[in-house]
Image (cartoon, rainbow, N blue to C red; front, top):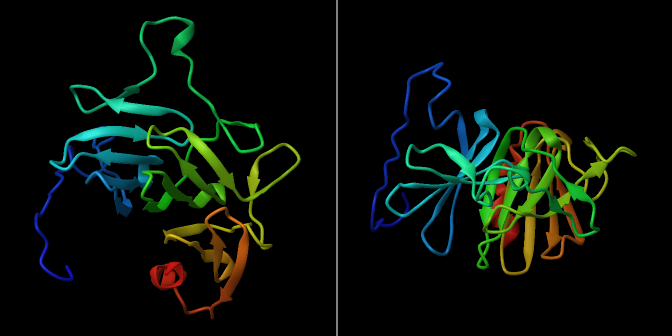
Length: 212
């Protein structure tokens, strides 16, 4: 810790190594929302988890469907009421109106802004995703092929295994790991500049400085 934390929260995992039912699996990124919620990139299970201030599981986000925790700590669709046609997954839309139904694939880095939007570095999908506080996809940024699938890229706004994201009131910084750089955007994701790093550098370690 830096400074004197007002509280310490310990989230105990359920199950041991190799247990498919355990809650946390290779958690890598964390972020805290304005309401005190804790968001965790549950990388091994391709999820983002939301915990309340007391450590209670509130929601499970998979990048395409918003889930809430039931009494057993499992996920269920928060938009489902009765079984039937309403049981279909909710697919978000990107800013161009295209269907966005790609689920996370090894999400690693997280950031949450003042409006509770969640920014996710979706590593193995080679994209950065912005979710609403309800888990609805607001925007996905990255290179796509003609079929609409995200693929590695090296141009502005394209990524090859992004691993971290940081935000400030005016900027968004993304650690673009396999391109050996950090990309910096304005809050509308307009590209501003990049910093190329040598092969020994770790882009994620300088994100907070660049976002400021």
